[in-house]
Length: 135
Image (cartoon, rainbow, N blue to C red; front, side, top):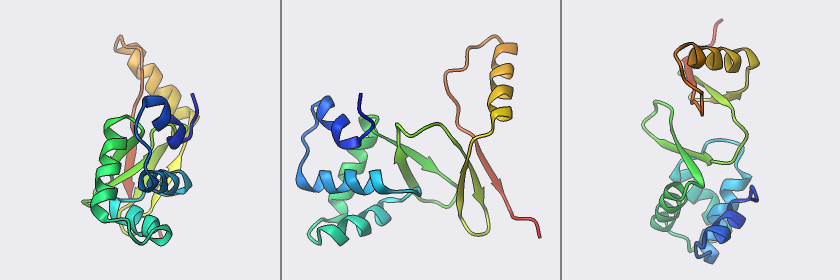
């Protein structure tokens, strides 16, 4: 299965309109965790006729279809990322709101060990750390 949102839409039988295509392309190009307003601003730069309501509906459809994952980083805004991105965890800077992605093999192994010790096979996890930068 393709990793591109548009290809996955077509495989799932979702209708791909011009505006949905733009939203999907904006999301694929994102190297951050945009909220709907940010997605709308980026989409509107390409198509000034796209409404924020269309972006909200498209993001909701993509989320409900398993194409996007919704993230809450404690700032009151829902943010989104492609559900097919490689696994990573997040460190959120509580002063600036910056979201830092990371992968740590020791943390991954520890989570596996904990699950096994408790009698479980780990199928997934989500780790979000919140902190402030040391001076």
